Image (tube, rainbow, N blue to C red):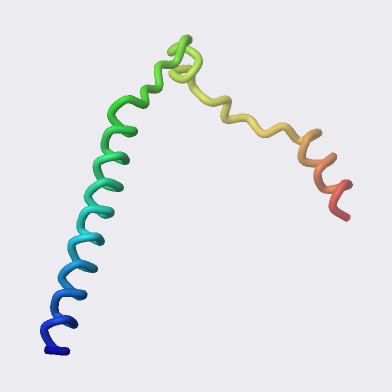
Length: 66
């Protein structure tokens, strides 16, 4: 009789865990689905990066951390 009660407890625990994990995954999928990122100025993200090094800025950083 004790063995049957233990089996029943394990099944209840597994089912509860399955429901909780399914709910969690469903909530995360829904949250990712409704979350949007729409930049207002796309040109800001497409302009090239300036390849020159600002020596004055690097000198100020070097003085700060000495």
